[in-house]
Image (cartoon, rainbow, N blue to C red; front, side, top):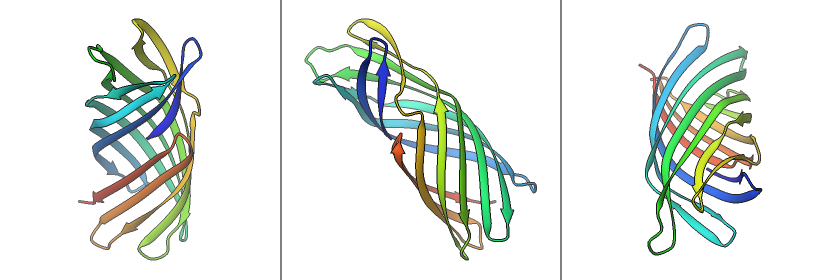
Length: 186
């Protein structure tokens, strides 16, 4: 994930983060799905104003609900999720203290629309979100938020008859992200 965060006082820093998550979920015959996710933040940085703050290991949790509508090979899926992450940062200076960084998505709504071509289902996506980021910068508690509050991109999934799926999802505008996912339907 890459984006820009704006903190109180008008300070802006670019954030990049690498995370790994695992999810468990259930899809009902009505195509309503529920999912819970947990993961770890592996690495990242906050950069701006000529300074770099390394993001250390941390954790994240999320819960989501989605509904899919289909007409022949065409489909639209709407989703809503909430999430939170907690990690630490350390400025790249000798003797710098470690500060807690907490981000919360109070609401993330999205829509994907696409078409099935046999096993492959390409789609376009749009998502909007909002929530605060809490951090300490220069011994002062600051609150921030993402500058963009949206994602626009595309993706595709490959699903086999046995229920194994591979997903590639790229948001190139707004909050930028790339995801690679695998799932198995039991």
